[in-house]
Image (cartoon, rainbow, N blue to C red):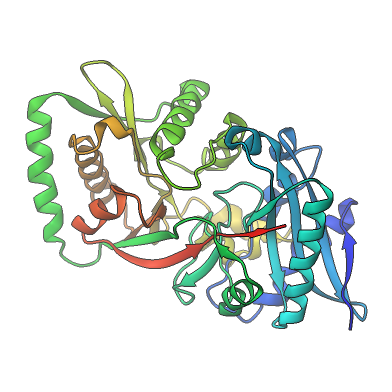
Length: 378
């Protein structure tokens, strides 16, 4: 039967759009329900910061009166201008296990992109490139940490079968287990001690009393540290604000570390460790209903088994300087002394990043999840 596409415009329709994944993942033990309050704001044109720089439309796919898929399609005008492209975005992609549904969605997106003067389509992710990034290609049975998406294996087949091509090198999530001896940590500590004695670099914690200034520093580090990567789209400041603001209430500033060049006073690197709130969101159903909040408010400050580092940033001029070693050593020391967590997630970083995967392996980290972004002509 032919699929029908119903655009989600009203508040009730957007709620229908956001709750569709419960149909796909109801029996998946790894899936973490999305944080509904945050997503409601994100897809609301009056509240979502994405709409300050672009446009997006949200569709529910129906067949014989039954919902069988959903997706968004849009244009990030600011990103297109920064890289001189005419590119549409696909996001929030979900569909039942039926290739014909995915095929109809892809055809719709291509037609939409053409009608809006776009030449290619890129994705999927939830409007901002760091949220629910890509399609899982490895680690379907592994934990889904905060900001990382989760997709069933058949999604990868559907994108590749239709003809989507690799949009950029894959991104990876790495894991460091803390519940076993780690001789790598002792080696790291010895190297860090030599760096401390030189006095060239130091490590400081985030200062929430200077929130706006710290956002400016992070914005500069994100673009300066990632500009060399294939397919990098420069961050806007409002996207950085949207990314980090939810963490302000739950993160310990003493676990958000910046590296400083003492000779210039410049902040040159960033390494955060925040609680993996997905452990709480999974337990409390993504805060879908008001009563889910009752249990969440009792639990959300409880320690999580995983601490996640969402960005390991270092300005290219300081690669190989040893400043990153100082940050990692300080972070591991603080984790061991002040938390009960048993593992660290490092996600997401490009598999071809010349620094982070190499440094992670030196710490005993290994890849436990891998994600792929696709591109196709309109």
